[in-house]
Image: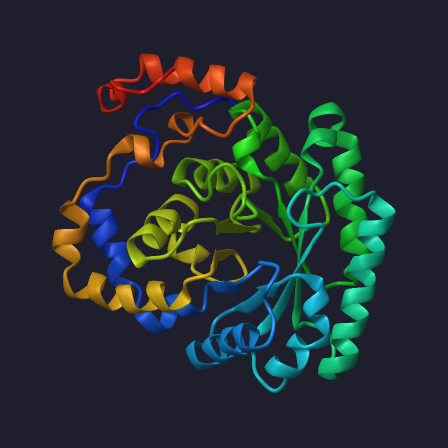
Length: 313
């Protein structure tokens, strides 16, 4: 796969963005949202509210850690909202057999408690990024073991794209597309940075139109969501929650701002975005040295590097 050196990376033509925005409503965008809270204190009132929001808005799922399987199925029972459980969050460092056991056990418990059969669970797994860099065959084995453990439920693979070079991002996307998974997802939301259009574009380019892409991390308003839709699901054939999802802890912010966006679409699409704010190569503060150095080289040759004139390289 050839590496894309076009800068400013993903661009957002006004006419195409206007058409995309106007194809959505606050109600329809909600169907793509995985309402997410993966913090250590998620339980009680917080979990109740998440389930209530998801059911009222008709969101895709509620996304939590697997320990919440004793509560979440009961909160969502009788609705179309799915349960998403994130395995080995956020580092992906458990051995494959342990990760598979937790997955299998969670699926079993969810089905027992919800009592509505198959098809109400998504499993998001965090791959072991270090092992991928050393031995991609390990990662394929890891993903397929999780798919077997999920017993036919939707499997999304979290690749932590901020920890990968562009070459590695292409490579892992190819590997996920070859696996038994159903989605590729960029981030845990607790990585060096979250969802950026260029990474979502690359993932969609590689996995094709019959595979799911999920964007997650820092998505709290409708315009941000629309830019990610443009990068990963621009074509109307991809406007399907089975092919594109957004992970967010701010579902109300996205849905409410979608209404504002529709009322003032012309003004929003004419407001340009500073390329560096959505470019993965300018987000270097929390990266490993090798990635930071390679990203800085691209920044120095970029025609937009005047935005970073005070950056400490």
